[in-house]
Image 1 (cartoon, helix red, strand yellow):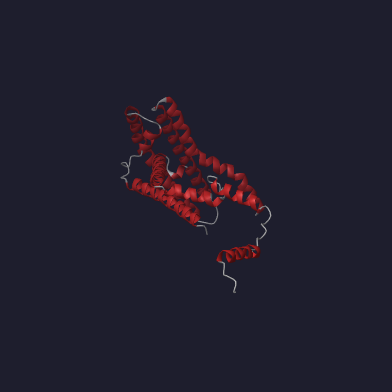
Image 2: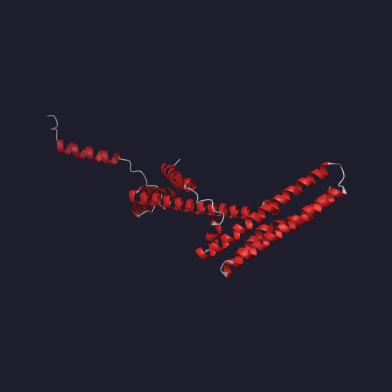
Length: 109
Length: 163
């Protein structure tokens, strides 16, 4: 009489066979420590602490509309103040030169 | 190149442009502004903080001095022409040319003395502190150049010696 097919028994055998054939690779040295270090780095705020993330933060700050408008306004104001100051100085020098030319002709100086 | 770096450089350029544009535009506007009526004395009023009464006195002195100054200038110009003619007559510095040069020097000295007297008179028409400052500034401007030339003479002498 032919052996009866027992699916439960076959499954068990197959599972054992598969388990035995599975290769479990050895972990690289200090694997666990490295994993924790990466997790900590990723979670620390602004931890990337390299130039790139700082640059990103700076650019993000400058591109914020309120900051951008304020910066443009400040630069315009500074430019106008300096321009007005320089113009005043030039006008003063011209006026001084005009007076001196009137009272002290070049032939005497 | 990093994208953020490019953006940051662009923003810096933009900022510099905004600043430079405002500066140039303001200077342009100020230059276009009609200059104050060509009053020779406007500088005195602003620089030495003169009131109307001070300005009236200074203006009177100034208006009195200008014709004398113009007359002196005309005499100096005439004497300079005489010196030029005397020098053009020959290749030597003749006795006549030397006499003309001396007369020119005397005229210049008289004119300079007159100018300094005017500065003293104007300084007295100002509040004392401002008057002192004015006199020092005028002497620096009008006599300072001579001092510079005289100071440079030893150097020039050395240079001539080298030649």
